[in-house]
Image (cartoon, rainbow, N blue to C red; front, side):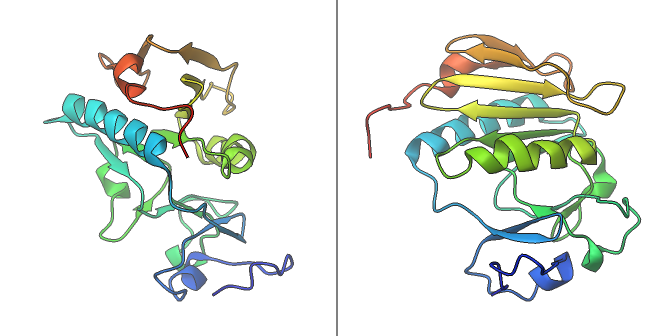
Length: 201
């Protein structure tokens, strides 16, 4: 187990590989962060339906959709050429799409996915909205989606020519959402949010 409370410690993927498999951590800019407890039914309903829609569209195409848990190693100041064991950004996005097969390894993804989806929960809001937002922007993730199941909202950020995320696009309820990186794919939010409860445990 890493000394996660030691704010002066700096961790890398090499350290991460030595930690117990039954513990779940992410590393952002060298800081070890415990992952949220097991997600609830609303979170999983949304993840499964989004993966289904992405997977159906991508069948027979070169891009691939993945879901957590799967390690994604993101470049930091050392760029993509840094040896794996020295990389200090290791995350497990809820859903992500990778179109470059060279990024797909046997045990992890090395390099920025083309699209990342994080499904918000009470314990993940700050990390997803702030820490991961800046990490994905810096790494060059072209599209970043934030899904709020109970509010039935989707916020989409797209990377601009300046390497920054522009003004967000917000979709609600039953809208159809075009996926910028996948021409021809439109996600149906009505089916994504079908079955989501607002008053369960």
